[in-house]
Image 1: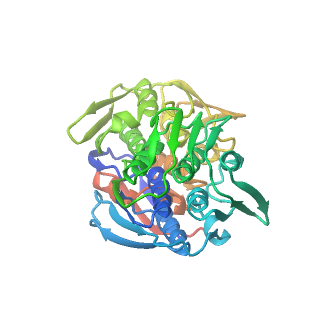
Image 2: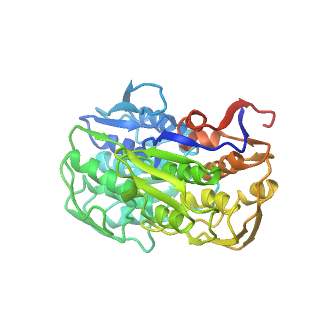
Image 3: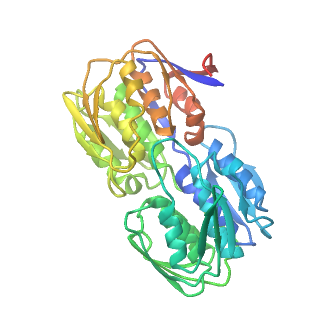
Length: 429
């Protein structure tokens, strides 16, 4: 096991490539199950979650061939997913438990084979994330669902229908969207999530021959087709990674050019909050220039919301920045009920944070102090790295396997912009 060791106090400056979005890449890979023609994806990030899902797709009958576009920090990889025939409709516990996004094979398996047996998923321990919205959506378009021995057992010929989500769910929207592409008839998805990653998935499905209207809105209409065909598609840049590095620039008093196309459009809620905190963004030919435009970070109130609001995946990183704000900030988490586990670790570094239910009050301090800390989930991990970049002394971040799930080549990227950071063998298990 490894840890990340950071010597704080160094300004970050330069150009920093933004990788393909993990939250877009995973459903796009699952979409490869919908066709026997093959799906080629470009700009796929080098991440542990990508490897985990690749193993699951292979278990189901897929064949994945890689064309690595280089190992420099600005490159992704190209993978062709070929599923001539699905050899198993069971996604086993051993694989699904490692990553919640594995539940997204349920829709494609059900649509193509008429049955699917998928273990209940795992992932970050950030609270209760039930899949009942997924299951009710499948029932609305003709599937029968049974929960038995820790598995979801779905079967039936999908016939289209109307799916209305009582609350917005990104994963459920993605799952039913994929399944509806091969259903008989038309499916109306009401109160669909509008996250850019869903638009990315929908555009890829259209490239594969799907008939989808309303992309980017809360009402998607999918007219089923008999089959989908081969396609090529490029994964969108990771808006959460970009927001995280924008915060790194501000916290260290530096300036980073975040390299990636269309970042302002996909970062709407994040940019609004960060601008309120004093950050300045300038569009460039290659991306977005980020820096702190005020003498100190400004205290703000932030509430996590579905897109186009401020994303829950940026909450921990924002909190790390607010530990240094002028005055106080209030951050309210409305998406997941257990997503403040980074608070005790930030407090170990001197932060002044009080949690009351779903609200955290952060009182700005003059400086953070380096300390050994422990990552509890993916985004919490990044908040500790950000704190370490600006803290006095040495910060050791343990359990960094969380980071490897969602931040491609983090050490190399930060080091290239002036950070004193390294991976070392961990003493802690």
